[in-house]
Length: 257
Image (cartoon, rainbow, N blue to C red):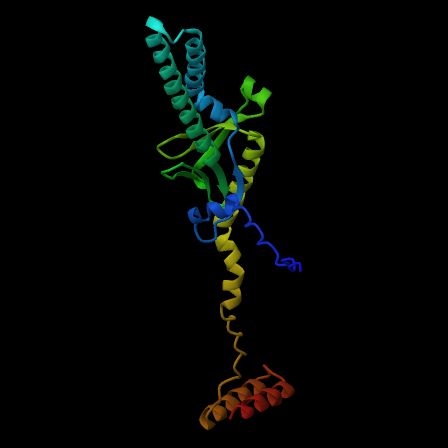
């Protein structure tokens, strides 16, 4: 009797950790990663060139060891060459492996606030330059870089370091454009913060008080009314005002009693 097939689904492989998640611990609150860039593979070749020579030297020593007879008096030379091949080969291979890992781990990040250089195989390290400190950028395209597809950028800063050099960078013009966009966004965020909050502050402020309506004429006492009517009658008798004007002013005075 055959056993039933196991229909349980195999566990799904875990998704690789992205560069943004990998360097999330370096970011401040509200800071976002805009660009992540790894340096050109020629960085590895340039850094490990001496170990490449050591490895090639070990290969040459190994070939020579194969040409020397291992018997008799030449046996000592054969042993030395074989040992030399092993030492040179191991040193060269270890150096190449170390620089390869260092190249694979190094990254340049452009965030909304900084340019971050991070790397390290055993001991992790980071260097960052604030976008507000960058005063200018110089992009270079060496002849071998034009062939292999890399360039270099000098970040001119207002800090004591002066210049931050980024070598062997693929598409340096695109990196500069992303950096300029990030710097513009940062300047708008910092410089426009007060302007952006101004309408809310204006809306929250209490409205100005409405202008008070003009008050009516003050009330008069009986003595003031009698004195005013007497003066008006005198003006009428002297012909300075008409009878109609006298009656009109008299009513206004009586209304204030």
